[in-house]
Structure formats: structure tokens, C-alpha cells
Image (cartoon, rainbow, N blue to C red; front, side, top):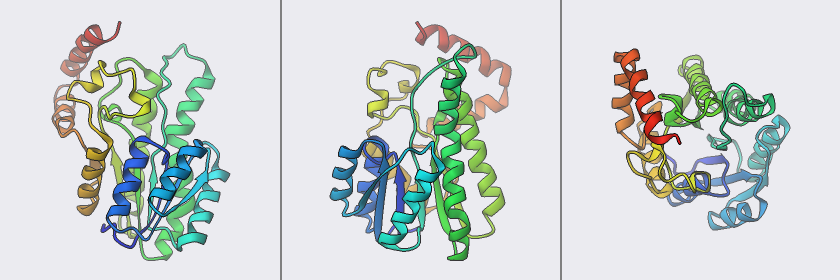
Length: 254
């Protein structure tokens, strides 16, 4: 997928990964960029910097995502790429209240579902399109200090897989972004955790990786390439991998 002349929507676009992607897509010559987020002030600044539009959006509400799509189409025409990027770091375990589980589920899974509902049929009618869903390396491996995060990020990857299987022969390309630690507001104060074992990446570096992977239309986008080796170890000997994860837990979880 060539970014030039494409109409792109990015949720979670006010800061961090979303902001870096908006800036990089603009540099690549995107026709239009719509950034969506709850952070109205910073969102407008990002939109202005990329000559795009800002739409306030709560991605846990399907009507809000439909509104973002409508505004993007009104401004720039048919949507070519939808980047479902919003996420949170609200950690919990099985004993955590249902409300915390639901929040993680709505942000990390249903937001991707709502985006697909809003754009896939239109993309097919227009000859194709691209879904880029932000998940996490935790969705391929796990999260040693949170069940809510690990479970919903696994589900996000599973949903992306189903979209690729269902629509891959109908002109819809799908990628799922699975970084380890990236320097954003969400990871501030967590510099010493296990996700940073291979270093904390700058959002701009991640954006470079995304553009390169999208050019090759790769399903898995792994800004930290070590993750591929970790996946192979996991699937090669699951029990050994679980034992190793418990050792990491003892080192990193206080």
C-alpha cells in the first residue's frame, strides 16, 4: 500500500503513536488525514500540523466512529486506510471489577469491530482498502502484570486475523501493529517494566516501521523484531515459555 494520495483516518490521534503516524503519513503525501480522539485541544493541533481535520471521538461508542467516518468522507472522499489505534493501560486481574474488564474490551476489541463495520463494505465497493489495528506484543506473548490487557490484546489480534481471512481476497489488506514499549504518555512511569527489555522506541521510529511494513502489506508489524523470535520460542515449547514468563514476573513485578 502506497500512502501517497490516500484518505486516512487515525483514532487515538492526539498524541503518541497516533500523532507520529499522522505526521509520517502527511510526509508521505496522504490526500487527507482525519485524526480522532477524546483530547480535543491536542487533537486540533495535530490536525492543523498535517492539514487534516480533527473529530472528537469516544471509540467505545459505535456512533462516534460512524461520525468520524462521515466527517472524513465529507472532507476528503472515500476512506482508503483506517488506523484503529486508541488504547489504554488500565491493568487488572480476574478479581478486578467487571467495569474494568469491559473498558479494556470496549477499547481494545470493540473499537476495531466498530471501525470494520463502518468502512469495510464501502472499501470493497471502492475497489479495496486497508485496516491497520494497533494491538501490542502482549497480544502475541502476554502481559506479566495484567490479565485485562493481555486478554484483550490477544482478542484484538484474533479479530484482525479474521478480517484478513474473510476479506483478503476482496481487496481488503489488514495489518496488526504489535510493538513492545513505545515512549508515549501511556507508558510514562513504566520505563523499567518488562516491555522495555529490548528498549523503549520513539513513536517516530515506530512510524517508519509501519510505513515500511504497509508498503509490503505485512499482516504482523513488529517494530521490535525480537518479538518474532519470542513467538517462535512460545509456540515451540509452551511449558518452557510459561516457566520463563514466571521468572520474568519475579524479576519485574514488585
